[in-house]
Length: 415
Image (cartoon, rainbow, N blue to C red; front, side, top):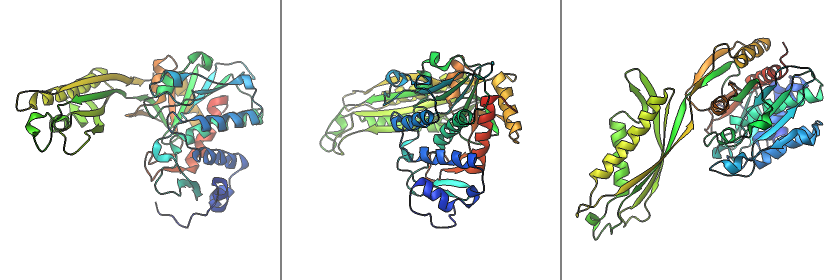
């Protein structure tokens, strides 16, 4: 990004004041919303380490007058493979008028690249002045939209139906927070709205599903200089398998007749010393598709490639290595009905905020995957995040503030 002037020194709020000429012209509610997202972006909170961010949100809610018994955390972190510091945060409010309960949600964890972010406002954008980090717009922007809606409603006594505000943990590592959430704490919402990446006018009604694979390749160690032929290289097996997948069209963008999906080998670790034939390699991979049968076919193709490679690599005495595969469904694909109440309500909220709603399907996983699978149909809107998971990550403030207006209307149901 071209930076038009040198970012000022100081804290996030000082930077916003010094560098926020556009922001200074906005109303008090908009400036408060930006303060919230700046504060949240500056708090480290990778998956499993969301404690400080949960504490910040909890303190803001208490400061606005929310009673202790309306704010709770569950034990999702104890049930997830990652464990972690804290579970999902839930704030539940009784309605000032009768109506179906509405839920607003946004995951609170960020990717490791965002640790150390120094968010600053430059015109209509927020970015990190530390060029080695992302800014954490994914998904502190969503968390701020949900918190802003709660604070606006509470502090201004805005009439509203029964409400649940939900900040899941551990989304970035497999949607574990929502998968293991205690649903009884949510109060049986009838309309659910999730905030994540992209434009607030883009309403995601469906998303792909994914398998996650952990493959352990076992070779046979041997001295790499004195007797390499007596060993079986786990690295060689892994390399042959990956080359097989690439050569035969099972890695990356995958198309077979009218079927479509993707796969990725995202992690390879193994070996120990350069003078030892490597006897162990761990690979982590994924297979995605909206078609559950084709997604399974991709996962099976990955396994078969590794099994072929195991058979191909032998020692001088005919010994072979081995492999073990752990495969689990991270999340299943879903697509909401065209007349699903949350879809209709979300579109109306965007229109009432002077936006133009567009329905979309995502090739990435969302907390909405597990929410919908667990019986709570959920639509997802963006918050103005750009270039997420990169050092060039930005938050578009006009889109973020539009998301705040949309979120408030989703919560209150008002036009």
